[in-house]
Image (cartoon, rainbow, N blue to C red; front, side, top):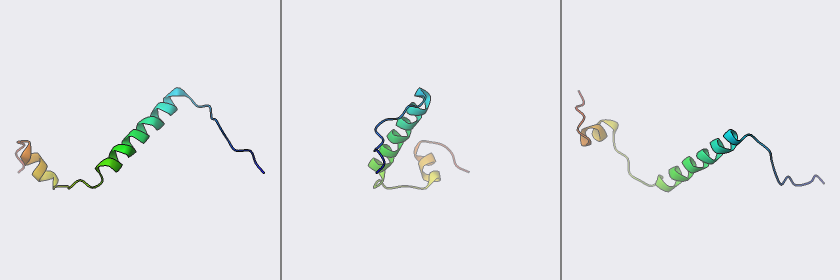
Length: 51
């Protein structure tokens, strides 16, 4: 039976990228039930003239 892996060594930059990805996924999961609107509507709401 193989041993269970308990640690890993990787460059700090790779670790930081993984943490950022996890943060992004958490934000997506938190906002998954929010309503959406068309892009043009959002632009109009912030005062951008869509032509």
